[in-house]
Image (tube, rainbow, N blue to C red):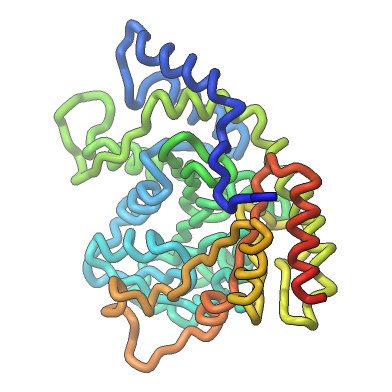
Length: 371
């Protein structure tokens, strides 16, 4: 049995629908291929499903973070506290504006930013904090938002992997002043290409993000630029495809969660033997990726490869250890939680169209390694 980590057939059941939508958009008399009525419909549909006051579709999740940081007027001399273990856009979105990403350590089990470590790094130069949800687990947003409010700094919530997750009754993306989702193809609400959205309840921030995504124009007067913006516009074919797939989103999320429940039940007894599964439960869980922490990661990965099971190691070098961000890493500083996560995480397949037999095969293979 061969089970790839990144499945090549994510959208196979949508193939005909995609071709029909492509033809529909391509032959539409309106001939509008970006920021048209389909994009507006998707924004409205996501407003309803998330409860956000404003949803702004943009070119990617990375583009959404860039827009969110710029909307807060972050610039030279400013600092933004970001997790040391994460995908690089949390840092590049800050550095690209001439500001300083300040790296906070993460919890070595959950792999999300440690609120206490984050708070210790807040100074008078802090312009925002940017917690990120990782793999299966939302960051501790109740503590983080309380800390941010105490210090009077806004929160950019990197919810790229967590659309559809809910923590204490509040959807992911809705805890921060600005939240960002990603539609990259393997994300929970992925698409055949790129895309993302910024969500907020702040009307002025939403207006600013909308201008910034389209070269600083307000959408009323063309070629009148109110801000130095960027091109982060949303594609109409992608909008049509996401509207088509949105109806099945909750079902796909539930399938991921059921697979995760089964994995965790099977793997929890292995904790004393060197494998730690994500914390059990549904509250604050997103299951975009199911990542184990394994002491013998290399051996376990080789074993699973022999069994035909694809795996993935995320972020093998923490962000402050990356050449691109070394200038922002204070000499002598250490991030032990981030280093532990980098050294031990091993993700296994959790895509929603795995069969029960495939899920059992994967779990059996992990357990057999320790037998």
